[in-house]
Image 1 (cartoon, helix red, strand yellow):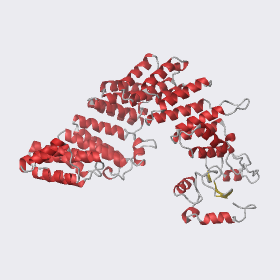
Image 2: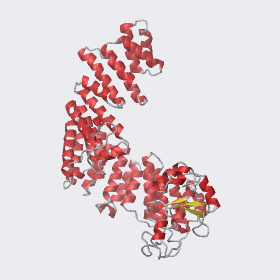
Image 3: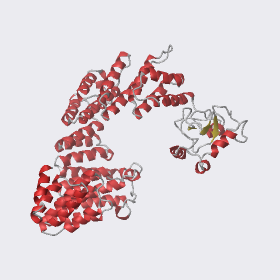
Image 4: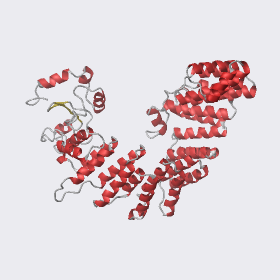
Length: 586
């Protein structure tokens, strides 16, 4: 803040700046840094301030009480222009500069300095007041909050922003009460009625989000919103019905779908698939996969062509019902839909179809889908390839079919695409553009988990194919192996002892001791696999010792007790009755 022009800063500003950490006060202001600075709660940086949010992205300045501290960020922020554009380009605070080029001869008004629009500041005040209320506050409380925030400057578009923000913050009950307050407000002559269709669609979408979070009250609330639209003369569109159907229970969704089919909206080739897809998702959420597939047949019988979202829901239903044959047919329909550009077929559809085939016992079909998808991508771009989910489904198919050689080849191909030394976690993908799914996996920090899962499936495929030594060595050589990979390796040790008579008990004990389980479920499965491996190798003393260690840590479960009782009968007859009684009681 420069009182009287561009002179020295005022004392209040200097005092505020003295409390800012040196790192914050010396670095150049830019939008990403300002966002990082807000996380550490700088003394003068609190974006949830009841005023203008202290740092204004529209003006590019810090507020200092009722004054503004000029800190111009770079680069300019899209939207209302910042101070640099308003001053140097003679701008008027809008998207483009309205003054002369160079700005020195252009007018330098208060608007040209890029101040925030009144409506945008009012949105911040309204949101601040609503955030202070509990979700589900009464209409009177919301009305008082709005009156204190002076909402008269808000337009219909601003209220859309408020409602969508409340939706993202999961305050859907507050959004519903706000709509009632809007409906009760007096309206000037010629002004549009509020809420409008966009507002109601935002409310219905908020209810649908709440229903996906298993909020039982969201379905009835969505139906009430739809009925209020009709009462107030606001005609619902396809998105209104799709959101209401997504929020409703299966029985209510069926009634809404029948209502939609009886309306003129059912003939809309672009909007109708939204509603059917929402109904299919509602059935899947209720565990009714057969009903979801019947909805797909129903929309086809009515002459509505399913889009990719509908086919994706159908493939999920096939996976839930282990219907591999139907999954193949629906995936063929998806490929026909993208016949002109098969390389643009979504990897989500491909991996879901492969997963349905694997669960349905058609692992050969899953691998055929993977090969066809890889060929389509290579034809579109030589550097492109299937995403990690497709690789995971292909390796799961190899494990189901005992195709160890194919699994090892797929894993090597994936690691080669990663680049780096042996596909390590620090590798970077070779080739591919910004939209490459593998690059997105690496940049999203998911590479370690992805590699662990793919290597786990490869170990499982080696186990299923009888490559027992290969399974053990692949687990032992993996970086950060998963709990499931440990279970596969321990089972391989057990089969080595059972089928070949080899004493692999020491190897099993070493593998188990070298990898602590990440969670309770993995720990239980690994403990049981260790004792089973020791039993298969006939290492009864080692099994009893391992059981005692687990019992001392309160980790012994019923399968462990059964194996310990079996070991006691073989080596320690004094403990056998006690362990047998414990196993029976468990």
